[in-house]
Length: 114
Length: 116
Image (cartoon, rainbow over all chains, first blue to last red; front, side):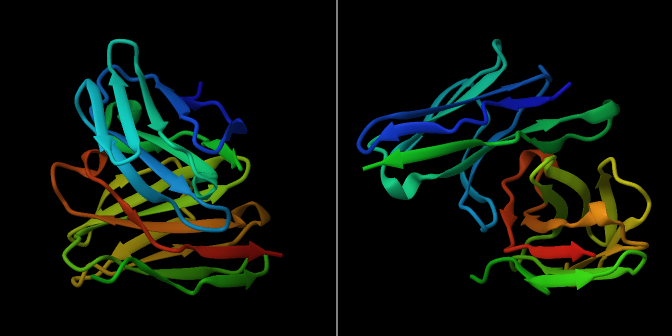
């Protein structure tokens, strides 16, 4: 059973549109949620983190967290072709009752076409 | 401030050999984590070192080991390489904070390991 689930995509949106990326997780005790962007052939780059229910905005990016429904999403406004990448969701999970460690989803591929 | 650095960037080994990868974290970061990334399994957590001690460990066999030095630099070792060990190995550093699961991590460029 996957603990952090993401739709692999690709999600294709036109330039200027809003891209919505979603992630669900299995552990109700999770408290930290991260979004990373990974360009092809590059390493993941932290975009945002969110700890509390609700929305957190940073420029064109908004992270939304709903702990009751166990999902976290990332909205990208005014999408640009340069946003085309794989977006990884990471959630701190506690495997086998041990310490919380970041667990990554498989990522969603986003394509922004001109 | 310099980012996370990893050496070497590319490595080709044959089955049965061993390999050592190196990671230098961002200055001031005391936690170093290692990940394996493959197309089939995605990004998987190997282990985390903090203050020269392994603080967390993922579900990998004992062939995968690591250590951390007093300057926070870390090395990862894989012994008796298998074909399935071919992957991108990523190192990430973070401030100690409340624990690995709570801290933002910053990734290095990775080491691409190919096992023939």
